Length: 320
Image 1 (cartoon, rainbow, N blue to C red):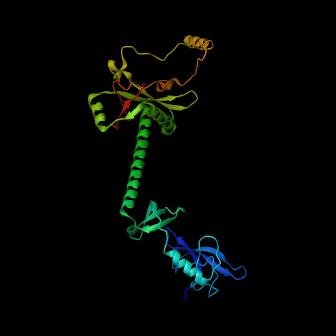
Image 2 (image 1 turned 90 degrees about the horizontal axis):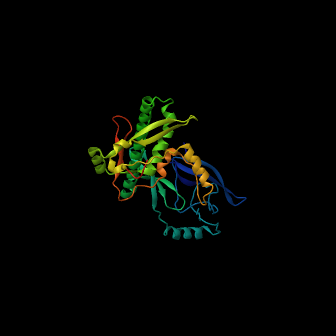
Image 3 (image 1 turned 60 degrees about the vertical axis):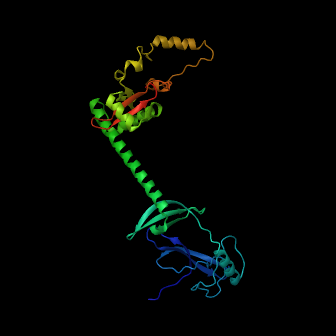
């Protein structure tokens, strides 16, 4: 069976099948242009690096069985003879541009050999599949390290989610709340994020061990709160009796005010110029207060999501 040879423009390789991607072309003698045919995938091609038929008339066989004499000039169409085009293409090939690898964005096994999916810094965001042997070691190490870091981050997020789900499940039973774990998770996570961003600071492992060993931290507790509108929220509160007198002092101010005092405050506010009275969520009132002075004694808090779980320790930056 004789192989069929057709003229086509080579576009690249398919990353999955490794077949050549081509678009068939056919010379139109009436319009003096090439008509583009369908895109196809073929196993074998014969590519001429310096000869492309897009903007030159065929010199010999009108059926494009042979490719001798076809030269493509990238840019605006140019009218020139084949000899001129071949000469121009030959001089241009000496100054071929080399592009840097922008990033390795994936890897793929072809048979027993590993290949990398490469993104080129050529202004076109070109992507090719390159053998491992042709990639510089530093680029491969950078890619593998990036993948390893991403995997570790993903695993840590999964573990954190599993810990949260187990904690919420035990809290529902212990505090005799209704609803499922999925119902309570959003409110609990929102509370954790709000408090951590405003008040908690990570500590080193050395400080963590010292705080646990010497019992220097105030214990935190998560409360599940069902609102009247059926919203389910979490409240991360500190158990103040764990703090020493040197930390909280002999006198403790309370944010609680009687209804009569609130009415009086509102009445006085109308008579005082530049006085601003606003309302806010009482559960987050302390988070809006100033942080502890920099020269004050460090305060720490600890939190265990469930019995037997990891003990988290943070430095407390301000009142809860």
